[in-house]
Image 1 (cartoon, rainbow, N blue to C red):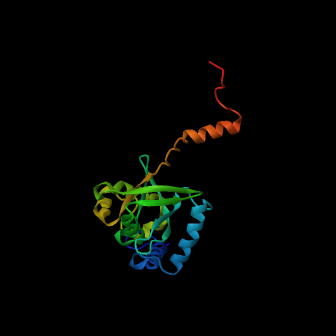
Image 2: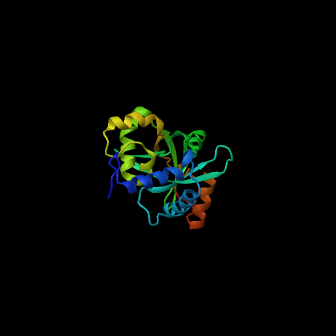
Image 3: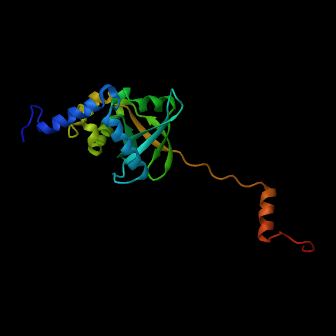
Length: 197
């Protein structure tokens, strides 16, 4: 198999070029949109996809409607992260920022989260880990996944990274005393009886 001057097999370089074309202007077009819809269905249901593949749901900053998008969640040092393979112009990044990080991850259920943007100075190891896990992102990031961290540091400001913080559901509040009394009565427990003392 022939290799190009950058060391990649020619077929890989052509596939990378096709992927970049499908997302020209930092937006999915045609075939990419169709593939994303299929991925969203599979990822949300947790079917035929890696465990780190999920669907992100966020409120559109202009329409107010829910917008969904397939993502790969990268893990590093006990934390989870989302990375924008299309850089700062990606629509979901703008929506997340407008929503102050409020979003939902879906894979066999819904997980409300807050996405906290990571400073560029801290992104390099996360970007490298992300490229290990997300082959589909590699054509869009101009650094090889095996490159030293210094190379990722040079591009870190161009690729937003968000730390995933799970929102714990609120603890159920105790029922008012009147409702507790009704529940006891329904169970046949009327409480202390007259004459006892």
